[in-house]
Length: 99
Image (cartoon, rainbow, N blue to C red; front, side, top):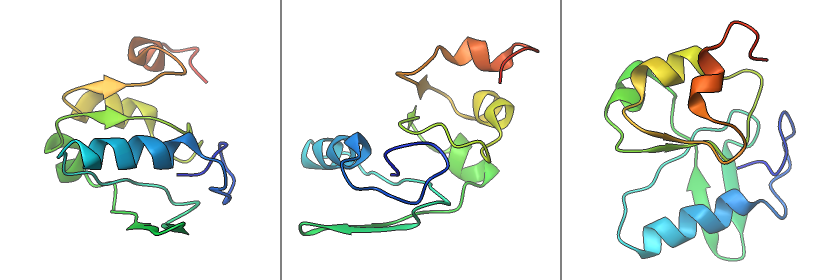
């Protein structure tokens, strides 16, 4: 939910709008963010879930809105059935030289 990687500030984050739009469309939405585990803003309230292997496997779609350095990219690629990463292609995360 943070607006920028490795920060604990969610003000102005596009992730909140994405979350709300998906929820408004009827999706069951959850998020993981160790930097901003709780978000309360303008009537929007949400709490981060644990990023377990089961959570990754049992989701329909992982959307990476903020690329925190403490998330294991390879693990997400291996376990999530589908990934949307607007910042870079998921296959790039599998490369040896991927940051």
